[in-house]
Structures are given as C-alpha cells and as structure tokens.
Length: 316
Image (tube, rainbow, N blue to C red):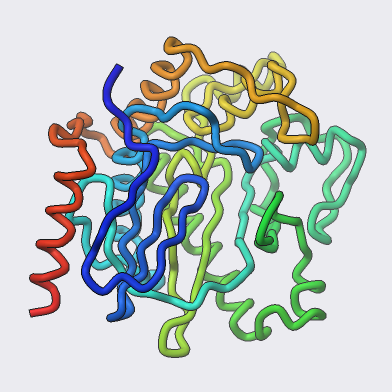
C-alpha cells in the first residue's frame, strides 16, 4: 500500500495559527497567506475514518486547483499557486459561515430527508412522487450553517437573513455565484461524460469583496454520476454508478455507522482502502481527461522544503 500522510506539523516562516480540519491542515501566515495541506485523511458523517487513503490529498488538491482556475472568470478565488501536488497557497479571507449547497438531483442527504416523509428542505418545497437520483426541474440551493462541532445544520434563506448571519446583498451575490459555478461545473462534467449531481461552495470576504474559498467540484465536495446508463438505471430502479464520496457513506451505513452516539467506526480493510483510492483516481482521470501521475516524493520533508522555498520566493 502506498504511503499516506494523515497529519502534519510543519514549521513555516511567520506562522501565526494552525487549524486541523477533517481533511486539511491549514497554516495561517503573518502576511495574510494561507498554506492548505490536503492530507490523505477521509471523513464521513463528520468523523475522520481510521485509515488514510493513498493519493487522496493529491487528487483533491489538483482537481480543486483545476476548477478554481477554470472558474475565476465567474468569481475571484483565494488560490495563488500549488507549490506541491497536495498543497495550495492562497489569500486569507474572512469566512462566511454559510455553506452554499446546490442540488440538481434528489440524492444523498436530500433523498434521506425526502425518504423520511419530509417534503421541504431549507424552506424549499419538494414535489411529491420523486424517486432517488431524479433530476429537479431547476437546481435548488439548500444552505447549511457551519457549526463549531457536530453536523452542519440545514438553514433557509429566510432564516439566514432574519438572523442577520450575512448581509442580504452579500447572500444574494453568493446565490448568484453558486448558480453560475454549478452551471459551469455541469457543462464541464458533461464534456467528460459525467453528471454533476450536487456541489457545495464556501465563500469569504477579502477587502470587502466576496471571494470563493476552499475546494470546488472534487469528490469530497460534489457528487457525480455517469451520463451513460443514467436513464436506464433510473427506469429500472437501480442505483446510479457514482464517482464521489457517497459510496463511502453507503459502506458506513451498511456497517451500522452514521456518526450517531454509541456507534462504532467499522474496520477498514486494505482492500476497501485500495478501492476508495482507485475511485478517487478514476474521478481525476475521467474529469480532467488525463492520466494521474502519483507524487513521487510524498513525504512531509519534501513538502516542507517546497513550500518554504515558494514562500521565500513570494516574499522577495
């Protein structure tokens, strides 16, 4: 099994803060720069799973940087450069606590809500008689409010504005950007024979302007189906073949884990870890249309050296 990096403890010049999320380690530097390391950790149901996934960090980082570059004509984003395959350096922004989730199909969390009998999500009415993975007439935006611990919580536009979480003009701009980004992502996925099912976007403020943050259109932040066979599977009531992290959630559910109190994380076999890695690489190659080149010097020492060299060059 390939080597994985599941934790880092870098010593970058002028580091003032270190934040370790579920997947990324984020280093804040004095000159309002962020160094974001995409580790090989994998999370589901807000829990970090016990084993790292080979090449996952590199896959996520390179897909995200590709789409950030491909959408910067729509909205400015935080990214400056990727000095290492699994590392991005970008601008520090003030995060907006709302996660913008847009759904083109009744899948994942939306379907689980629907299956429970609820016909409204984030204040948006859901039609009767829909089937899992069926397309909505128009993509719906179902925001979530980011909480310090535990699951992010669904929230309606009306509640966001009532609680003054963000100014109305900024929220409406985020909605506009969300629809434009999803449209662009849908078009790019279709060119590669894929359906972009849903996606989430995170925004922040820099110098008073809305800026796109974090990753976009990766298998951790989006869900993809294959165009080929989609209609036939829907007509026959079969599950869709998808390239996303949803199959990891499904595996956990099958093994009696949904992140609820008292549940125990199942054991991840090496075969399952390899399967997850292969799925991530498959999405990279399918979505970007080129062969995946594994990082040959995947070690904390080599990553540290490259980033320090980049930061020093940037400050000159």
